Image (tube, rainbow, N blue to C red):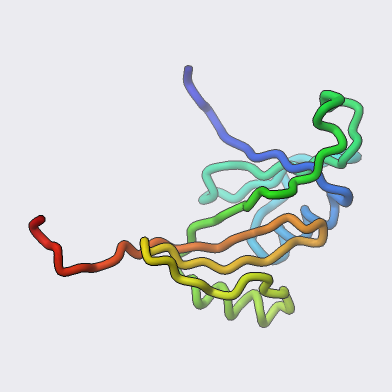
Length: 133
């Protein structure tokens, strides 16, 4: 198998609202859009984000009414504190404050107008006294 591109597809109530949120606050651009559908990309994201309106008859019956619940759309960034300050200044509500895990992950979260969780993260491996072990 050869993978030529990647996408995550999320069912939401209001496709234009989620599309506008990623465009305005996260630098994505809409590549394709139609009634109930939008595909967004960034040159550096490594994947497209696709929003589908819940209930679309083109989806299998067992998927069409599902919502993107329990999913976290995570983006690794270089300047986590700078992104946090920028989003706050843009009026985006921070729904999970900046946290740091013992394994080196630092992250905070926001939610788009449809409740999709967007997490910005960086990875800083913990330093320890076990060099050479």
